[in-house]
Image (cartoon, rainbow, N blue to C red; front, top):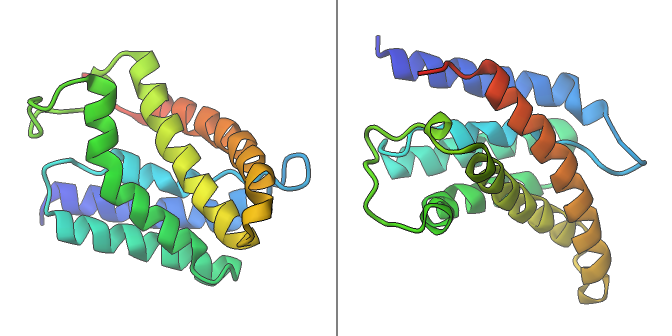
Length: 168
């Protein structure tokens, strides 16, 4: 069996269980809930089939929605960040010609890793809070909640990726 398939399957299941059993029960300051499951989108290999990646991203978001009773907002947000992930990476690296096959997130500088994590996390959280409130008048409130949740989630994701990724 393909080792990447096994690794990504274990990552998928592990992140779902961590999110459902631990991180869905954390509400920092009453409303900040860390989204650790988006590490799946951040760490998924870049040069794999895009269609299957988008489907798996939607599936992990939908799974979180089912267990969190959130009506599809996580699936929509996760699918969107999966779709724009390479564009954000191009923006951060300021080039379009890096080698997708040899690319590893750990090969970037710490500031670029954190920027990549934070930008995608903020977009994810902004979509979630915007879809939950669904009123244009609450855009400032949604933005502030997304900012606070993104900072909290990004710090957890950054240290988790640094701790659990193999050094090469």
